Image 1 (cartoon, rainbow, N blue to C red):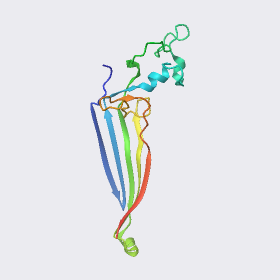
Image 2: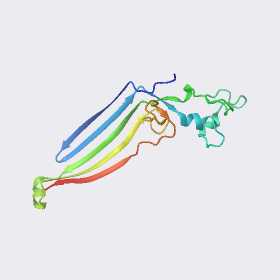
Image 3: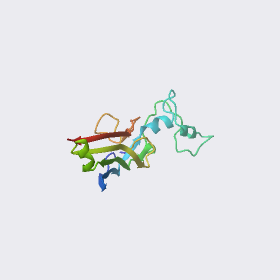
Image 4: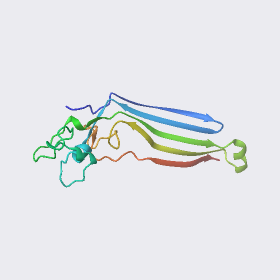
Length: 170
């Protein structure tokens, strides 16, 4: 066994601030203690398939004459295709998952418009992730099973999204 697919702990915290009709909600989530097998590095860094584009770090692969001290294996040898701990990375992260900023209009303004309440808001999702993982997103599982968490083979990153709206009652 190489690495730990399940985190030691996960969590999140949220807080809401109110100030003169404005409200700001922030939500952070984290994961700590899991490892991710970066299959992208495995394939695109060590020349595993000759017909693929490679990472720039591929230029630093092992060569007995040119680069004998490299930590990237030699170019793919036919019949040898094994995973190693070289591409297992720390998958711990802290993510700013959501920020929502809203404004509730005062009652005296709303009476003139015949509304009871009105709130205008803007929400941002997947704002920022802090991690030492070299891949796109440390929160991955791309082997088509919940039994293989932490396997990153060209996973899509979490989408950044912006949502806005107006909610009201009358």
